Image 1 (tube, one colour):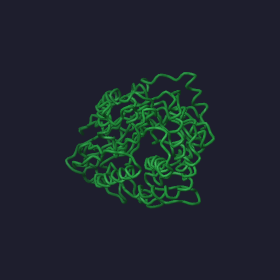
Image 2 (spheres, rainbow, N blue to C red):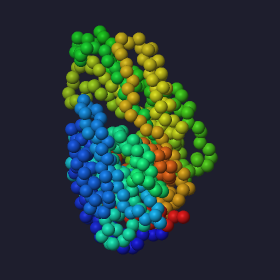
Image 3 (cartoon, rainbow, N blue to C red):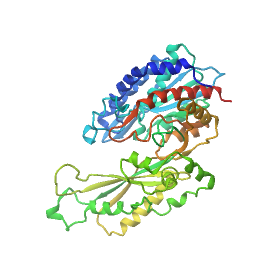
Image 4 (cartoon, one colour):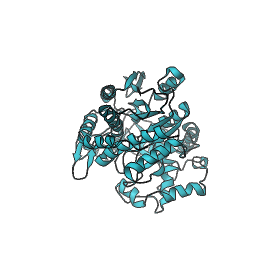
Length: 479
């Protein structure tokens, strides 16, 4: 069932106002991983809550408690749970998004102020931190609500909302919040939910919309090496003491090779091989090696074979090295031997892997390798956070509704993808509610989420809003 023409017309004629509202959201520096920005995250949550209320959504702010971070006890940003409509004759869709963002500084390499939305009229790009991840998609849903409210059109479905402010920092407290709400049954705000829709990922390329039915999980670690009582002068202590940095670099080199192969025994062995039917899904995708290299900004693909690269991103685990805490990294030449360093790395997981299954392999391997050094330094393996992988049924009516919406707006059949990133709450919704969960991306592969100069194309924001609205109509008409 297509959306009314008046809905699409409203979206087109109010595009500039929608972009201005996105600019208002981008301006709030809701960086959940920075203790100094915690109040900004809470401000962003309150702003979003106010927007929902103005559009007729009944909401409640759920206090998720406190946590320890960067040596401080901090209030967790509230989860926003909302509801609009309670017609028993209509299906009920639960919508998830997150209002926090990754850190961003102009000095990181941004061409513009990351927290001032820049509208590039020539390229059509809306540039700013959070534009595509995930403030743009959240505001797409607000655009849908506004159109219906101002046009006096009833929503085709009942809608429930769950927005959080800690997705970029482990979603602390959210799983428990969802599970507690579900336990309330008919007294809870999630009672009667028929399906879930999440818009927090991206097309596979810049041409073809996508529907995502799988996500990799994650297990994030820090290898902490300590030895000397304080930082040392390399002229006085070089080749005199066991240096923590030397041990750490050697250990990190034993985690993954230059071809991306994981060197920890047993990790890859957990994953069953693909069959011919699954292989055909990857072969049919509108995707080339040029796409991955364009998105990466360089000719750095691990293989020239499309299916190899796709499966490496979607259905195989990966291990990436992220950085070293405690090492000298400023401008200049400081001749210091750090007394304590922490090497950060993560493993992206696929079914049937889980963080609980992975951790023993990681610990055993690193302990065995470190023992071979005969170093007098001490090593601690710290598990920081993680999430399970997820896979859904693409033949469900929820996916069929989204497919029809994309075809109606973009006149293209979407790719069906498994995404390489992690959205742990996806599995929480699937397991807690027992319903189909769909990922309906708004942005493109080259949006640069988590990177410098993050953007959302104007066409994706406006046409993507139409897809979200049309999707609700297709869900409402689904058998």
